[in-house]
Amino acid sequence: MINTTPRQRAALLEAVPQIAQYAQPALRLHPRRGQPTATQSSAGGPLLWPDDEEWPTCGAEHPGGAASADQPVVLAPVVQLFKRDVGAEAKELPEWIFPDGKDLLQILWCPNKHVPSLAPLAHIAWRDTRDLGAASARKPELNRVDIPAAVPVECLLHPEAVSELPPISVDEGDASDRDTQPGRAPEVLESLLSAWRHPFDTPHWGDFSHYDALTTAPGWKLGGWAGYAGYPGRYATCPCGAPTRLIFDAMAAEGHGSWWTPIETPSFEWGAPRDWQHVEPTDVRVGRDGFLAFFGCTADPTHPLISYIE
Image 1 (cartoon, rainbow, N blue to C red):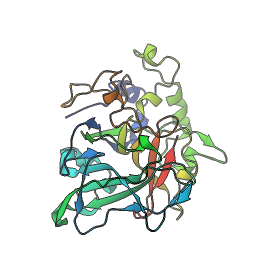
Image 2: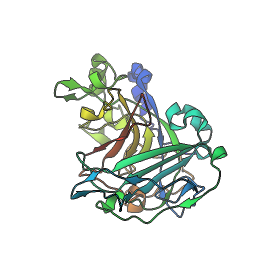
Image 3: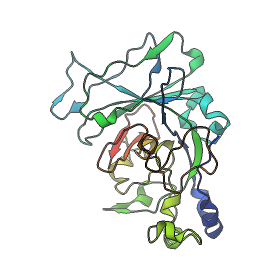
């Protein structure tokens, strides 16, 4: 059991209790380096893959040339999450993470630049292990990698359910976050949150927003709120017109030195603030700031995921 919900959250909720109604559940994955098997929750490890199912490939356009029909681009395994490894906390999560009785979530992506986002494109699959049939460990050799930092170091996952709060809205041209993301806090409440300072931890963050430090968890996570300067823009709406939700956030750093650190000693090694194998355990750092996220359609989960990079 791990608990990284900041202690400082209590002072915020006491001062501005109205913000609690805008919280959204998320699942921090806490990857840590290891040698996972196909029957374990992992990042970058072998996947439990049906023997009669082809490994997915990318047929999208890549800068420098599109994928050819005779040499499809092999996708890299990124996340495998078994519901059993989430435990009792699974009931706190949004239904889409394990929909319709599914108990296995798998995410793969193409570790190459794509037009127009110049980010990896992701593929997501849900499975019911009771109906999986013949399956074995699969991790094919990659045949094209334009972004080496998009190939994860093998890690074991240590899931933790958390509650996230909405970031302060940012105007984006003709529309603000509040216009494109239902569930945002009203403007009058955001004014209170922007001015709020923790009564005892002021030196820790100085003039930076204390509220922002308590909103969204760092590191790899499923669901929750997206707290990026450039979001929502074109990421808030699926091409079909439906709003999107944050599916997977592959932020590089785990948040060592932030308020999102364990309250008690976790069951796995957390690591020191300068211990890189724990600070950025997967070695995935895509984009200038190491922010990589994927958004999915709320109307039809089979629609392609939308890549975001910052």
